[in-house]
Image (cartoon, rainbow, N blue to C red; front, side, top):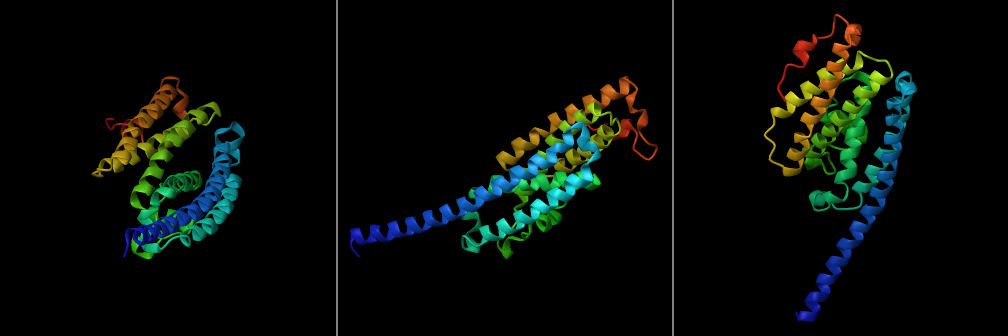
Length: 236
């Protein structure tokens, strides 16, 4: 084989790879648009009227996730399943954003942390890498960390809306989340850096709860809730 023939074959391989990336990019763009629509919908809860309309917003968001499932199924057809990590960077960030939105949706509905399996069900993808297009563990964890930042904002806006009990519940949730991440041996530089930002979310929420306490506005806390001294006792 001549040098010219060799490089002609290499060019064919490069062209095929570029074609795949272009097809992936088109689907990712539609995913990003849907993700923006879901975000706009969910962030409506930060408005004062939004606290009274959470069930309706959650229902509408789940309808949008139906579109996401269709788009992700299409994305999975654009490349060989065994080459998932070769093209992973193409959709990694939008997938992390969708994980965050699914986690925020589940929190608004139940005030619980969504499991990786539940996120996979919401998005219509697999959990195990051996099954093809799946949710990478680090993508799941990155999405959950984004949830912490959103909840710190929700705690502040809850006070503005006159809901003084919600920040206490958010504080309990975020502290448990922080304790959970401390159990992980994070070696991924990007994920580790994002986890380091969690302490600022914890601090911000603690300041909200402290302010409520000194103003005597946390009297709405129910007996069934954990005392503040136990829920916020962990060191940052």
